[in-house]
Each structure stands twice: as structure tokens, then as C-alpha cells.
Image (tube, rainbow, N blue to C red; front, side, top):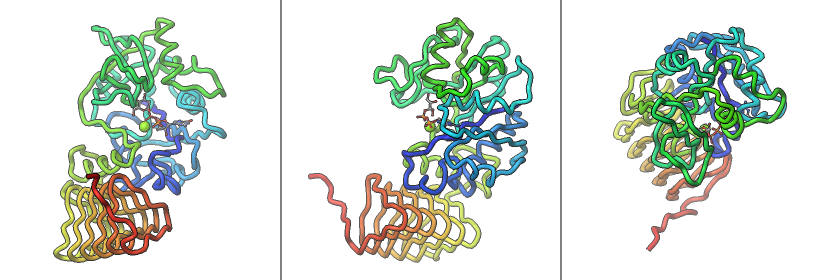
Length: 355
Ligand code: GDD
Ligand code: MG
């Protein structure tokens, strides 16, 4: 089966990590995020993937070439972003399958343990135009809200509605009948969520929902990105692309963790990163060459390449861009972000709880 992978978004919610690297290429549990998706797609029977690229298009081919994780790869880029639907239509030029064949479409920022083969089976049994993977979340207003009838047929598609009618949402993995992709207008900006799905449903086409409650996460926010990395390292979601056995931490080549430092909770310690004695690092992502000094505490945070947490600094839910330096004694909490190359002098920021 062929697939189209949507990777043209700018990843704005993950800035400053995405200033230099597109979201799908951010190192996650030791490898580029997409490696996990490619390896899983291969395990689910996908043989060839067309990348629909836009933002920093050239970096994807440089990262994966023409074959990776068991899958043949092709690249189609948009000069200007065409939106999710326009990107699918544009990338479909590079498909080789027949008009009635199923094509898998994947959002490029999803970790999912769902059964793709079962989704494709439902699609074929129902002779559907499109079959969507649906999952349930606590806050459906941030996603595409997708009600279904008692036959599993999708009755509406409400993208990011403030008034969700169900907590069942679009999980960002679709099976399209190849010919249904051709109903999307060519060379136009089209949203598959706001235009294609509602118009297919209105026209009476069969759109099915494959509901599953297996592991699922959109890594589009800093909190979710850290959680996804942590879940892969701990083995909560198993990935054939993980460069090591699951456990409390993943330590990459050349990294050094001083005896007595506490490093756990699914932390990744990047290549040549350093954690000094007396430091505590929990559930965090340290990219290559990051440095945590003596006595610092880092929790649920990301340190970009070469970033540094100084002596006794406290980072909780913080993001340090590449090369950012947090001087000794600072306390950063609540999603604070330090831009690449910025240096915070000692004790410049201290956290004062609301009274
Ligand atoms: N090639 C290309 N061109 N790709 C794009 C473009 C574009 O113009 N715009 C977005 N993408 C890609 C992104 O890179 C991402 O992989 C995917 O399309 C979805 O975009 P996001 O920006 O991550 O959307 P979202 O998370 O707000 O919402 C989407 O995903 C939710 C599930 O995580 C929607 O599909 C929702 O309906 C869904 O619930
Ligand atoms: Mg997303």
C-alpha cells in the first residue's frame, strides 16, 4: 500500500525548537520523529510513502533519502503551502497505484499504536470513499470533532469547533480511495478538514470512522512533544525505530552521566550531552551536546543542541533553544521558552508562586 505523509506545517507551537528543524525531524527518543512513523507504517504494510513537503522541504530528503525503515520514499514539494487537502492532491501526482486502491494519508506529527490494517479492512468492507481513524480525547475543541452513526458512518466533520458534539476526534490518519483524492481541486489551497471532508459528507459519499482507543498523541505542543519522547523511551508506545531498549532513560553515544546524578522518567540524553554530579533530570529531552550542571533540576523540559542549565538552576516544563544558556540559580517554570543563543545571567529569573 502507498501512503502520503503531510509534513509541510511550520510547527509554530513548538518554537523555538522548530526554528532550525521542522517538527517532524525533531530528535525524539534518539531518532528523527518521523523515523517512528515510517517504521510503524512499514510494520502495518505500507511499502511506499510520498512526503508532501513545504516548510524546509530539502531537509526531509537529506534526512531519509529514497529508502528508510523498510519503505521506499518519494518527495513532492509545494512552492507555497497548499493546506492539507491541496498537499494531498499535489502529492498524489507521485502515486503509482490504481484508481480503486486504498491510499493511507498520515499527519506528520502523530504517534499512534492503532491497527492500520483493521482501518483498511473496514474501508474495503464498507467500499468507502474515505475512512478516518478516530480517537477520544478530553478536550475535543482543539481537534476535528467527528460524530458517527450506529453503523460507524461519519455524519459531520467539525474542525476545531468551540461547541463539540462528541469527544470523538479525527486522529490524523485517513484511508482514501485513490479516485476520491482526485475530487480535491488541483493547485489550490484546500483544507481537507474544513472543505474536503464536509463536502464529501454533504455529497452522500461513504465516509467511515474507525474508532480505536490505542495509544495516540499529537506532538504539536511542547508538553506533548516531551510526553511523546518520554512514552517512547519508557516503552509505553513501542517503536521499531527506538535505538535502544525501553527503560528509565535512553543514553546516546558519547553522553556522560556523572555517578550520583538522578536521570529517569523516560529522559533522553543526547549525543555528547553531559549531566554533572548532583543533577536531577526527569522525563526530559536533552539534545546533542546539552549540558546540565551540578545540582541543577530539569523536569519535563527540552534542552536544545548545546543548551546549558547552570549550577543549581531549576527548569520545569521549560524549553531552551539551541545554544541557550540558563545561568546558575535561575528558576524557569510553566512553559517558559528561551530562544536560541540567549544567555540568562545568574539568578535573573526566579519563580514566585501566586499567593
Ligand atoms: N504539505 C503540507 N502543506 N502539509 C501541511 C500543510 C500544508 O500546507 N499544513 C499542514 N500540514 C501538515 C502538518 O505538517 C501536519 O503534519 C499535518 O498537516 C496537520 O497539521 P497540524 O498543524 O498539525 O494540524 P492540527 O494538529 O492543528 O490538526 C490536525 O490534526 C488533528 C489531530 O492531531 C487536523 O487534522 C485535526 O482535524 C486533527 O484532529
Ligand atoms: Mg498536529
